[in-house]
Length: 317
Image 1: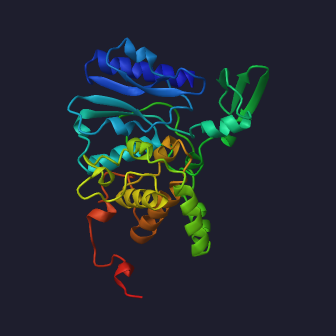
Image 2: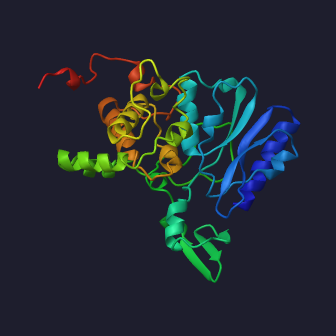
Image 3: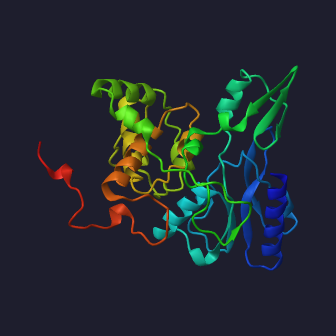
């Protein structure tokens, strides 16, 4: 990881020194162990603060929409898929963007790490590649990185960026396709059980909109939940209104969501939003053989039409 950080710093310095870009967006070390934070390097000297490790989980595509300056971005596989989707939606000018692609084996789930150390304070963490050594007051624990990466990352088959201007690091092994086993299992449950599960999850939502704000594909200038005339849903925390918000947001990102998990990671209440977003991703894949952000050539599933498209929703049962 240290070597990757050095290579990223060198690449960023060169781009800024040669004035090929005005800004490099990447990550810097956070103030706590196992934390990193988005960082904007505008000078070659600032590029020396860039890092890369298994905590660089934010989707940096969120900072690229409608920019007029020339920008380089340090981007892992899911970030690049978001970038591709946003280029197709004319939210990013590819001519002004330089992608420093980073192959990714998965990002660490802080909740899993905290559970592994029984919620004890973490003073120091050392990433040894396959393992993480965690130290605190009076304890030291070694965990396998594979056991603490995000569930989204474990099933991701796009660890390698699908497009890039420069690739830093060795490509990671290709994984087999996502079979959406979690969604298939959920679909098999009785309707009443699914309804009860979603109601329980939505009852946890405090409508902070962190999920919306973390999503690169949620960029409407005015979200329907913020409208007052008409007021589509109440401002109070009501389980039914919470479900409407999450269901509409999921439908709005259908065929656009790249399954990066940014919404789930941002949620402070642990709401299982993925049951909605991954259900729609699965349906779009099965109905239209389309995955968002995989290449620049395919037309978005909901932006095109063919006579062969399934239209089961038009059939009266």
